[in-house]
Image (cartoon, rainbow, N blue to C red; front, top):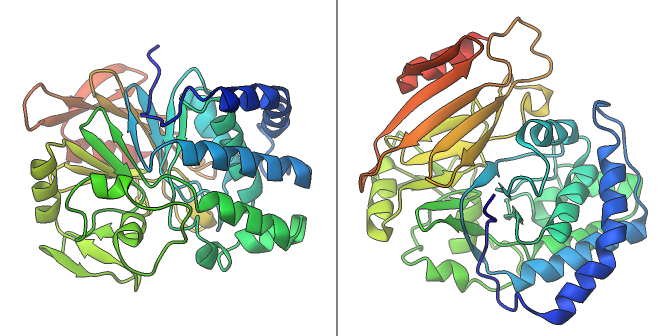
Length: 366
C-alpha cells in the first residue's frame, strides 16, 4: 500500500532517525499497554509520568520538523473530534485497521469532555512517534491551554498526575500543525475558512510553538463554522471567529483549484455532513457525544483515486436492531474538473445506489 508522504524539512536527519530507533522498544511497550483495554470501556491505563513526558517531548520534536501545512498523499483515513472517548477511538481503529496498515489523519480535539483524554492523546502521540510519516495529527481548538483548562483535561491531569504534566502537554499542543493538503485537492483543518486566508502559503508561515490567539488566521482555522443561513462572513454564536456561507467555500475552492474542504469541530447526526453542494464535509468521530447526543461517529477514507467513503460508528447505547451496523457510504469522484458526487451504501444484501438524501435517511433508520 502506498505510504502517505508529507513534505518534511530535515526528513533525512540522521540524529532524528537514531532517536526514533532508541524509542522504539519503549513506544511498543506503551502502545501494547494502551491497547490491552480494548473491549473494556472505561478501563484506565496508568502510564508513568516519565513515559508521558517522553511522549510529549519526542512527538513535539517531530511536529516541529514537519510543516504547518502537511502535504499528504492518498490513501488515507480521516477522523474528526475524539474528545477523550477512548473506547470509541479503539473502536475506530478496530474497524479501520491499526497503523501502519492504513495511514491516518486526525483533525483535532483529542481532549476535554470525555473521561479518558489522557489515554486518547497518549495513544495518538505514540502512533505519531512510531509512524511519523504515516500518522498525522492536526490541532483543534481544544488543544489550547485556555480551553482545556476549563473543559476537563486540566482536571484529569491534576487528578491522575499533576499540573506540571498538563503544562508539558500544553507545550506539545503549541507545536501541532494546523492544516493538511491531500493530493493538492482536499484541504483539511479543524474549524474552517478565514477572511484572512488568501494563499495557502500563509498557513505554512504561521509560527510555532504558538498559543492560539483570540482573533486572526490561526484562530479561524481552528474555530470557524459553515452556515447555511448567510452569504459571505457572519458572526459566530460561539463568540469566537466567524461563520462562512456556501459562496465563500465555492470561491475558495475555485481560487485554489481544490475539490473539497474537510473539517471537524461540530457534532453532526450521522457522523458526517455535507455543505455547499458537497464541496465541504464535516466529520465527527465521537459517537453518542458526551452521553448526551444520539449521534453517530464517522471516519472518511480517501483512496488512491480520491474516492471518498464514510464508515459509520454507531453509539454503543443504540440497541435497536440494525441492518447496517458499521456502515459504509461511498462518495464517487468523477474525472471532471468540478467533481459530481454520487452515493452508495453497502449492506448485508449487497450494493444499492441512492442519492444523498436517501442515503442519509437510510443511515437514520437504524
